[in-house]
Image (cartoon, rainbow, N blue to C red; front, top):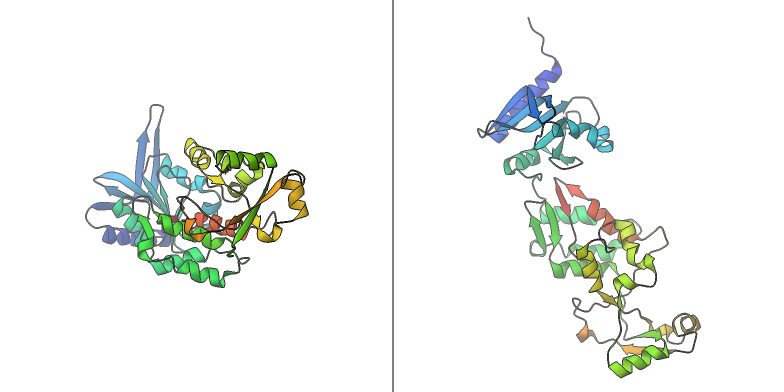
Length: 337
């Protein structure tokens, strides 16, 4: 008489589930050893299930009956090292109590949470992504990243209108979702203060005014040459997403982006502005008419600055950061500009 422990029965059920879903192109074996040799040593690990493709170990599966997934989120390296040691392309931890599959792919340093259908999709397509969300579900997920500090009723409505199939790009190989260029610009513009002005002003020195008149050209400032280094790296300190020029590409891109700082017309004769920017009240204040026909939002963009509520509260940047940290079924959202 032999005893079958409950965990073995569960692994057998999981084996059958994988076998039926994957079909004849794959073989799923229980309690199987996978080995990998290097110049120095041979490493061997036994897995609850091993999924073979073309008779080559492709996926290792570890079953956890009552354990919690909290540790895999806190210390993923403790878990994926077992797959990494034997050069498996994918590794899965299945937490039976939570009915969640944590998928690791070769070269990654974390796991992604999948449902069973999405795990099968990832294995079949040999890509670490599952079924993509429909556009309505995606809108709910992304707009759900909005912090409570944003007065979000009207903003939510305007952003929700951007989520239509034609406005989105789904990269099936990388699992990246993005807006088209024009729509992405509309997304960012919607996050900025919405005001309409007919005039703006700029304080400057008399010497700069004479140069403008003499050369008939207007001087703008490169984003990488702002007088306050904090302005250059401010967004990066929130989102860590290449806002600051770190690579040749971003240096080149930022050096080809220029800014003209102006203020609203109610500051046309402001004593503080004269002292700070008008050559200690010896300079001049230039007044510009705002002509909408010249604003194409591509080569020339016009909008108020979003300063945030305090040094530690900038809800719009927090929203962007939350979106960049969002993941589902291996899919993530990215911004291109």
